[in-house]
Length: 93
Image (cartoon, rainbow, N blue to C red):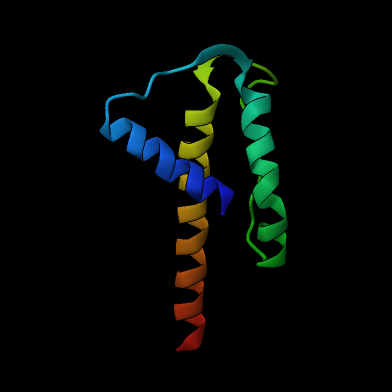
């Protein structure tokens, strides 16, 4: 719920043209792995095959952690929701 509230606040800032990027050098592989872990329990409880397989163990780049977190979290949330909805429809027939 806190994520959703923060996203709404960011959207409001964007509408007022007051949103700025806050770039910092980050190991993006480790950063994305932390997001992956937040979905791991759900994937296991719903029997969804979900794995994290980076092509290299570490990769440093400048990112806006807050925005990348939001985008990645939303993509995974939508993917999980779609998978669960599709699975429910397939098995309810």
